[in-house]
Length: 332
Image (cartoon, rainbow, N blue to C red):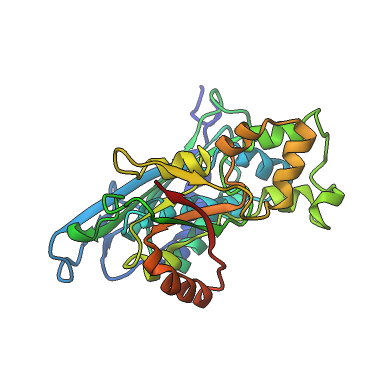
């Protein structure tokens, strides 16, 4: 007799974990959640009373090979936060308020400890931003992943009034590009970062503290949580023409995505000091400057495009959020 468990899949393990986590997951619910975890689909009642023409905005993403660092470090809670923050930023820059989130966790062998750590990070990030973790999927696939590997992806849904969608259509020549600091590498470029820092090029271990990092370890830098810009965007969206969340493709690649046809941008990379981790990667890996710009955020995780007349207000709002806006370029 051969069972599913004999084939490497233990369906009861995940169920036991989610039984323990259920109260925490339900703590993210508002009265809008009609049916959450346990059903075939999550049901959410959208309050449209404050919208003239409500438009749903959705996004899906993962955290890439940052997971490899988490697995090696045996620290998984921050990965869950990374995923939620990344997805929130992606729809917030469109002007949307996030409503609910769904996750997908796949592994070669399910570890109750790892699942719980990842889920606690997801739950914490959802609680912090006031969104419901309305559902998810957990899969054990020993023939697809190695036993210690896992992957994580998330879907987020938000809402915005049609007339308040931020899509770059209002960008004009002469607009200023304002950069806001990242918390580090965020969730993009880890294949290159790992190859340089943890491979044969530099050969660091996670606990190493290179002088360039000023007392921080490789582990601290590589697992720094992806910054959430939701509250800053909410307070600033009425005075800007567009936002760009700086992910894969770098500052210019992501900002060009929102430019109207016929417009271009100029970015002055000398206007801010890059976090030391980027200098360490570039020098130890002999990484060309253009590769650095195309791969990493280089210390700028969010770009706001605004007319020069909004400068005073941008500085006021940024100060209230303990942020220092940097004029990194212009539209021409």
